[in-house]
Length: 171
Image (cartoon, rainbow, N blue to C red; front, side):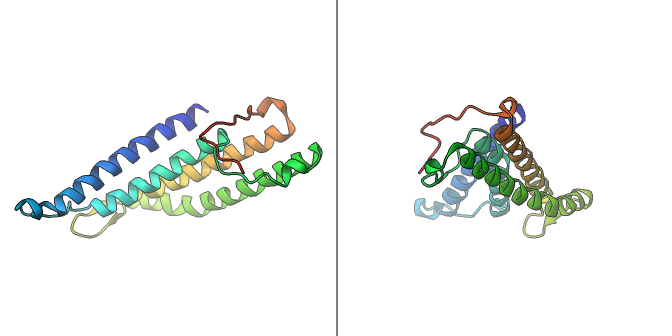
C-alpha cells in the first residue's frame, strides 16, 4: 500500500506540473491581447503528454486498492455470496490479465527506450523514455494489486475493508 501511496503522490505532482505548464502555455500563446509578443512554450505538448501517462499509470493501482474505480454491481448484488465471490474472482483475474498484458508488452520497449535515451525530435528534443518506463511500471503495479485483490477473495489475510466513500462511484 505504501508503494501505491508514493506513486499516487508522484501522480499528483505530475498533474500539478501538467496544469502549470498548460496554463503557462495558454497564457504565453495569448499575450497578444495585451500587446505583447505571444509564443507557446517549446516542448509543452510533449511534456504534458508525458505527465498524462505518469498521472494515469502511477495512480491506477491506488484506485484499485481503495476500490475507487466505477463498478456496476446491480446484478452481482442479487447473487448468492458464493457466486458473488466467483464474480469477484473473475473480475480480478481478467483485470490482472489485462494489465499483465500491457506490462508484458511495454517492458521490452521501455527498457530499450531507457537504454538508448529515446526522445521526441522536434523544436525541443524531449525525452520520452520516462513515460515508457512509468507505463510499464504502473501496469505491473496494477497487475500485482489485482493479484492481491484476487487473493483477498479467497483469504481474509489479503482482504481490504470495502469503503463506500464519495471517491468511489458504485452503480
